[in-house]
Image 1 (cartoon, helix red, strand yellow):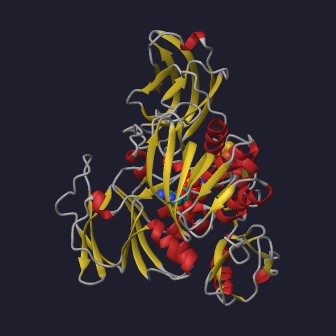
Image 2 (cartoon, rainbow over the protein chains, first blue to last red):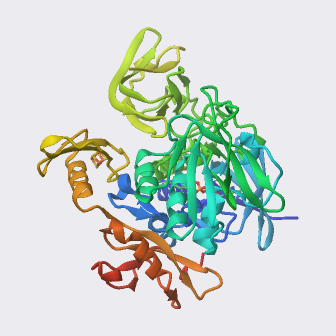
Length: 418
Length: 129
Ligand SMILES: Cc1cc2nc3c(=O)[nH]c(=O)nc-3n(C[C@H](O)[C@H](O)[C@H](O)COP(=O)(O)OP(=O)(O)OC[C@H]3O[C@@H](n4cnc5c(N)ncnc54)[C@H](O)[C@@H]3O)c2cc1C
Ligand code: SF4
């Protein structure tokens, strides 16, 4: 019979979100366990050796490993128990507690925990999910995999490549591969505007004269065992390839930077309701999901572009998980119309003592001089002007809302207008 | 870029100093630079530097002798001339780290005569995990 261990708070995933969550929970005095499947802590930051991390939090341009180290170095002074090379294979719910099965080097372990924090990060979309045709051959890889090969294994995965999609990881890899001596023929984006941050377009592509080709996509991969070329075509406004615009580009790798999706296998296995807009859990302002005692943070909750906000979301979850209340939350729905891609949190606790709530949102399209309105029925509770809004750039906005303003059953509605 | 009489040229620069990524419209007339669109002073400084002597920091990796971490990440301790990015990367390609260095340790001094050191940015060679 396997012995069952008890922890007040168990955090799954030791990226920046999980590290911040575990430290915050420990700080509140809760008995905390941090579980990571890899050998090292830091999550995706281990391979993000470029700088630009921590500008908001530390006012410094740190590389990913340096940023992670600021949190990892606090662990020895804390009471957080850390398990690496440990994989959570199953979660069961019993009343409001969670029962975890964990595969570790010493064998299988069982954990009973009052609060569970999901900080499992996100996954990259692959060619199958975006419908590129052609046989499966070596040389088609995601930008994150290319980054792992280059920055962790020290192996250049290509000599001449095409990058499909203009997400930030793809832009950063375009520069990285160029510096390492590979030829990046171009970055191809099906949408009319880049999906990464403008600063990355500028410092990763323009600096090295790497062409950014918008409204173009890869329609076919060519090659037997290994990729030898790709077929590129222009697309129309509906993203359909235009006949007659095809061209063949010889290359040995196609690198995909076509988006990230929150990793939610564990959350879904216990029935945590998911928001179809963020593809992450539905949470309140304390990052508690609709299942009591289950929290989500970081990229598992919604894909962030700034690690500083990832750490913040971990801290919010860690603090709340350490001091749970059985009181009814009195959840008020938060909704947005089609002018926004999404808003997080999707619920507010009416019964909270804290009046300031922090929201994160993305606009649905590029907007200049836009006004954000938060309303309940006809009553406008908050407005704010933004000079520029772009979907790749997430906005963080604190809003003070009183108990009275949250009264009644009407949802809060977010709306943007130019 | 448009050249007009009395030497006016215009260029849009994306500020990379902070995540806002302001687009700054720069106009240069007879050596005088006028900037529009930046949200703060750092943006103006960046734009002027960009037009006169563009600087960048470099992040890359160098090889090691350790099988558990065949490469370790490094960066320049300050900014170097943009035109030297490739040269410095090539010079770093010659270095092989044979000691278990930690964050902040200098692995190359005054690299390519830039006056800037190259420092280690990861503790993966010293960490138990
Ligand atoms: C390639 C890339 C480049 C980026 N560049 C920048 C940048 O320049 N500036 C910036 O500010 N931000 C950047 N970001 C954003 C920021 O770094 C990420 O948003 C942040 O690292 C996400 O943190 P996380 O903790 O949510 O997830 P992750 O860092 O992905 O961590 C999740 C962890 O959970 C573990 N895990 C998952 N499932 C299990 C399981 N079942 N059992 C045990 N462990 C599990 C994983 O192994 C991993 O360690 C970048 C992100 C990426 C992906
Ligand atoms: S101008 Fe100022 S606010 Fe705008 S991106 Fe540059 S540093 Fe940031």
